[in-house]
Amino acid sequence: MTGNEFRQALKNGKSVYGTMIVSPSPRWMDVIGQLDLDFVFVDTEHIAIDRHQLSWMCHAYAGKGIVPVVRIPSPDPYQACMALDGGAKGIVAPYVETINEVQQLRGAIKHRPLKGKKLSDYLDGKRELEPELMEYLKKYNEDHVFIINVESQTAIDNLDEILKVPGLDAVLIGPHDLSCNLGVPEQYDHQKFKAAVEDIITRARKAGIGAGIHVFYDDSVKHELEWAEKGANLILHSGDINRFAQTMHDDIIKLRNAADKKKGKSSVSVNI
Image (cartoon, rainbow, N blue to C red; front, side, top):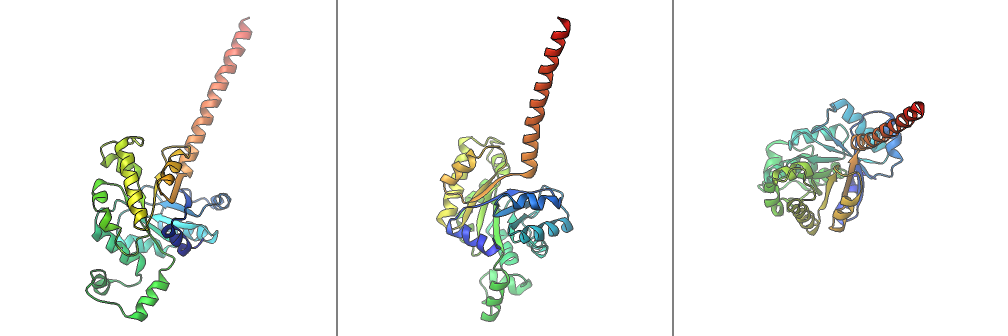
């Protein structure tokens, strides 16, 4: 899948499937390539991945036909450009709350390499761009996917206007930050949280924008299925570090319990 195909799928309501990847191991490429994923989500907001590692990962996954989607550290257009220069096809900007932030990011992701006053005037509606330049920018950026994190009540309050910004392809709910902002930290089954998630998904899909939530807090798929029924089509399930931690935790508990049980039986037989 190319970035453009990914973008069109989001707009058309088709579901795309991915997971978070934090490991830069070269062996991981073949493993992930067997999972039938449409995209990988590489997080540089919370995970220590340097620019060289990020670029290598982006090019490797793109070579596998998997769209590399990178969350940048902050809603900064310069950081978006840096990630795109490194090979990212999709950009997720964290904790976006204002239309101005969305417009600035739009300029960086959808109108590269245009910069400066000319870009600002165009984004502000103060000037038109030459037809030849517009065609060039469209072609240059056709594989770039623009996604914002919705993670606060302020973003929800501004959502209708945000969704009108041209070039926005999807909204991705950050459940941890959103739950904290709503005053119900990590209570992902709380009615206040669930109502907010449903509202975001419903409004985004009505506007023809892709929508999803990163479900890392549950090792089942029940929450993804619940939100898919509400219209979510950006399906971001768990991550390599989450699945490793949960699976290893469960295995160690089973091993400890089994070993302790055997030790108990052994000591009993010796005493007898």
